[in-house]
Image (tube, rainbow, N blue to C red; front, side):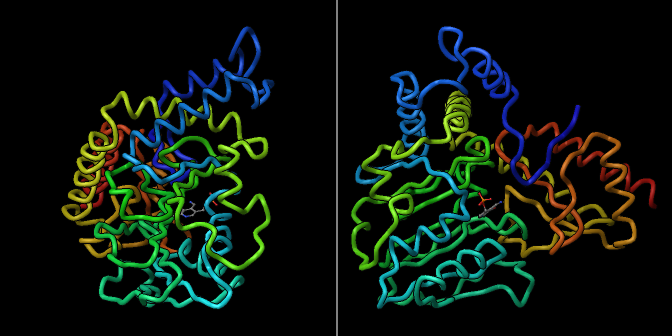
Length: 354
Ligand code: PMP
């Protein structure tokens, strides 16, 4: 058995793989999901169910639209300022890692940006907390979970300007109060479903306020009016996401999976703190539950541990090249048994290196 700790695209539930495989062979009357029109009533029902499942699982209030888009979270980095940043105004951003940085870079191509907080000088190993969001900003953008550095925002900033969040790597892993946000977006390939799909949750009333021309494919309003079918949507990704959302609902929903995610994260961090060979890389209060980053006290042992892990069936444990060491990504579908297996491996390694 492989234990998949990959950062994304990542593990999905086994039953979702089976359902996806079956749909490739026979979605309806012997036709594959890959050969049907997105305009068939059967597929329209899929989009509707997936949309409703996101609304239900995240408790999305009235006045918000759930959209299925393409282009990844990276396209949202540009789509957000295109829709929300006026030509005379400015947007406020927090710089908490590679992805936040890329979002800032795209926004700067379209207008003025003020970076109101940054943890760059500390290699992004914490989440900045004491900063001011100017009241006259067009919006404030932050990343709720920094996938590469392993930090997560547990207290969302309070502001009276529209709050925009890249939730790519922790969406559906914990309960959030959507009404605090004006725009949430996420690449699907962590807790939503397969790559190729991007989810956006938009508060309708924030749109239509900028004075720029927005190309149709980049305009949230166009996708809202088209009910996520303005053009051909990523049919297969949406279909598989629907199965994954059903799985999450059957598990008891986000509040239930959050309990599991806390147990998994606590168990692994406890071992990192206890085991003399390993140490965490981030401020303890900001430690991500989704992406656990750690290194070895003696870095010369890291290659050997990775080799051992690979031989023992562990996948995707190498840290991002900008951090080094290890990153154990523990998305919703990763079982606690995989976490216990990793802890055992760390304990065996400690025993061998006494
Ligand atoms: N934001 C975050 C927090 C991410 O983790 C990632 C990718 N892992 C991205 C944005 C970029 O997503 P995509 O590849 O879907 O463009």
